[in-house]
Length: 62
Image (cartoon, rainbow, N blue to C red; front, side, top):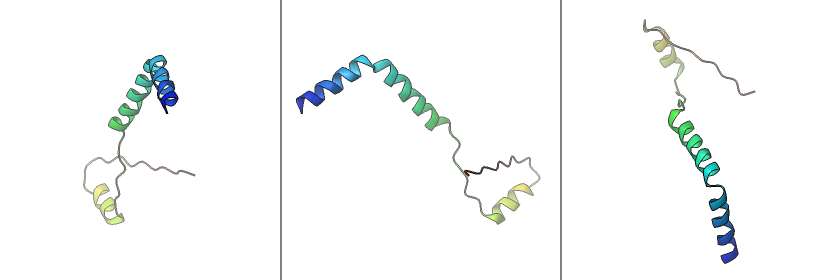
């Protein structure tokens, strides 16, 4: 088990900058992403007929 710990510490020592950048990118993505809204059809109709500008985005994952 000591050999694995030594390998991991060497990996962290040699690649700390890359791991830091990857961690910052992942953190930024989690912080800046827009969560999906689960609207019912009635709530959607009410939202688009409210008289306020609305952005409707369609996405297909196929």
